[in-house]
Length: 210
Image 1 (cartoon, rainbow, N blue to C red):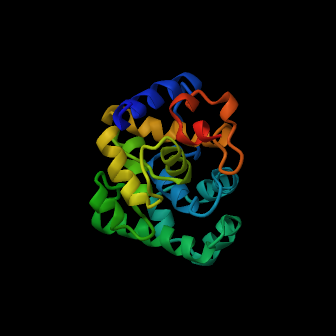
Image 2: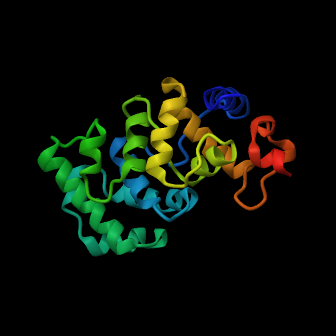
């Protein structure tokens, strides 16, 4: 099978196991999503979801975040780790969205990555989940599964994103990334993948090496 055929097979198989391709971060609007995603760097989504209710309850608009006391934000987001930097970025990105982007979350990759603390992973998540555009969110689960399937041979997030864009059906790419997160947690574990119950095993190089 070609890489494109393997990718299409994986897309269809994961649809069966995870019909609801949902983002693991809880957010009610684009502002909450971009903030939650910033907090998720080097932190589990589960922990972020425990922290954000208090943050979102206190700060409801970009104006609220832009005018926030950094020490207060730091205290709330402390459990997510790297809280000094994350609090600074949340305030700075909110100010920039107000000053430069009309109080809205930008709708293109270039503008998104110009925001403090926003990299391509966050930008792609916003493009896919908020604006419904084809996107490849190269998180650790997607990178691991793509390598195990032989779709890529790199752990560099940018290279993974670019290579997968060439072989994934564009209309399926964003949901495929969400499903890879769910599959990575449930089956394709980093240390002990459950290849015996994985419906991708037939096309997986890792499974067939065992």
